[in-house]
Length: 429
Ligand code: SF4
Ligand code: SF4
Image (tube, rainbow, N blue to C red; front, side, top):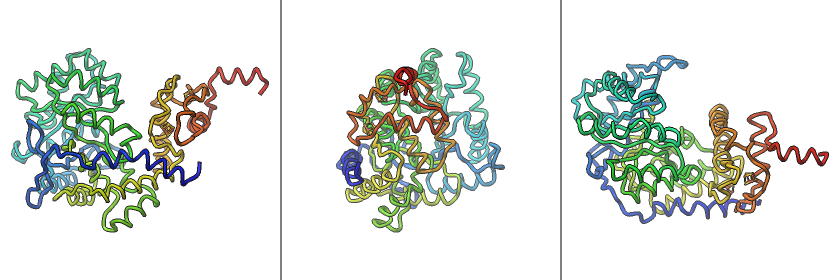
């Protein structure tokens, strides 16, 4: 495919990115307290800062360990509090449990009502219903918080949703809310829009107040964040956003993408563009950022103080930067998903998305572990070369060949399905 065609097709596929924000009704009023980050009022809930502090990647005592550097963490959190960033998001397993302890140590000197603390029930750690009470008591003790402002079922996926239903996690959380031990309940989510729709339908009229999803301008279609965002918006459920920089990838992007952005606004960083994309979505109330260093915090506070949504012209610039960025990626997949579903269960756009992320960042470990996490039912080894997907792909990608090459790269083995291999062997090839 010619580069020009890829650019044109990508722009068509990305039309939805600009359209998503353009002309959207502002569901949440944005207020600007003097000198502090802008805020939004959750429907039926408190007014929260648009920038929240994710406590998963705090500075550590040693590179290999998980213990947090208390002195540095205290400096960061105190600066955040002064800037109006008083929403903190922790979890049972962050830093091996030290994130909950650290935030308890640092925040316990502040009046309890001066900050919002979000914590999560770790569904992956639950074996029996009694674990719920034990873990919740441990979280309260670690954080010294007395109660949690926001409490989430952590990481809903097809598997953990089954665990949550079996052990009655949502009913347990409703009881915590009735007892005043948590104020608002929701869940964080890492799966398909189809499952999100199912879970939202099950809980919408049963006390669900918010959902935390992965969303950024690259995942808008690759990860189907747009569909997830729309499901929540349609259901009237506020969104809290994680991974606004896609694990840091969008803080740097590639040279081609950076050139487009800096030509339009030399003073703005790629991270600022990424945060402004998320903050411009009216149903996003808090955007979480794991700010490991003071310069991250200072820059993000600047972005969210007197927050300015992207203008239509800026949205077009971001579209163009994304196209330029994607042109340097491994496979020119736009994540449109026209090739899906694959009858054999291969998650084609996910595999290309992961591989492209690896090409952009060089993070081989992250790529390999995510690819292997797909399992043989969904990775490229399940492909039987039927080529049904190729006919659907507007980018004319030779999908089975690209998949085979990626699989061979990761596993060192051919991705040829045994049936295909046997057939070729029978032909003497
Ligand atoms: S060629 Fe492979 S990936 Fe494409 S539809 Fe067929 S089995 Fe699925
Ligand atoms: S491989 Fe699938 S998701 Fe990617 S561009 Fe082609 S049809 Fe769209």
